[in-house]
Image (cartoon, rainbow over all chains, first blue to last red):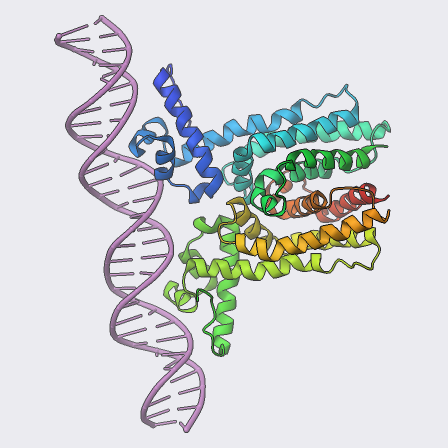
Length: 205
Length: 205
DNA sequence: AAATTTCTTGACCGGTTGGTAAACTTGTGG
DNA sequence: CCACAAGTTTACCAACCGGTCAAGAAATTT
């Protein structure tokens, strides 16, 4: 029983404070990584005292894995929504677009994920195996079918997915670098235009 | 005078030990990030005692910035070698290839860099501004010229560079994820084939 | 309003971390 | 071989960190 909830029925205060803590922790973990984050920072950011945080969560790691669990669902959702019966090129472009939008709307989540993977996914390996892998396998099969049907240009499906993740998440994970090199406020719009061209040219049969 | 060298002439022992320390620190920083790394870990990995490490470096941060400085040069070298007088498409494909090879040969450096940028480049912002930015500006101009001459398909030069960095470094930075999804040992070969197709299709006028 | 559960906090603890002081050992030049 | 510098180590410290505890403040129930 490592998980988070006091099992019974969460009161309004519990709901509010747990949400506060997770939001503050997302800030801190995304910015400093797991080891770089401290409970004091999370306490300060959430406006609660440190012992009070430990009243709602079993410990630092418990907060972290709770965030990671929540993240995994949201992260995989766009991939689940790829429609087998839709137009292949449109479906993939839509997936790219959604991933890019998530990179803009949820940069903290993207960086939390990047931090975890960078350090070898020590607290996420099971999730990757049980959640991500089968979904990627299915999607790769689907893309292979589309290619076999001549509806997409032949490319390695897995490397295609890697490139989509890399190019879209880059704008969140490497934001510090992007901002040094691009002062324009239209970064994401330009990025979408670029990525649409990129994948349209790659995948048009 | 924050830097690293005892100014005069480094003895053989100094050279050897400083190299040992930096190599061990690269391991540790790349794996755990700046705050996650400890001097004791670096000491153990380098075979030296902790005070002895502090005899050669001013402190943890000094080791880190020394690594970052060394890294910046090596990291920018492939971009400097893009030849204005070469064939545009070949030059860019060669750049992609070199970056991908660096991702395979120097994954620690890639992850060290990724960690630093992820956390907002707190110890590297000056380097990005003074080293990276002018080089990227020049390269973006060059690519724009090539496009204006009709020798490359029209794309945003900066987003092109972002995508190259993202897709190539992804194989080092997200290796833990890649390995979950690809068991084949030919990951990098397949990646090169994919990326060559990707950028050839994108950039062929 | 009394009783009971839920929530919050200040004080504290053991372990870790970056860094220091000083003594000791090793290398080196005359 | 001696003197002096260069290199190394043992012991230590103050600050920090994750986490505990017991007691008090708020809600909630009866």
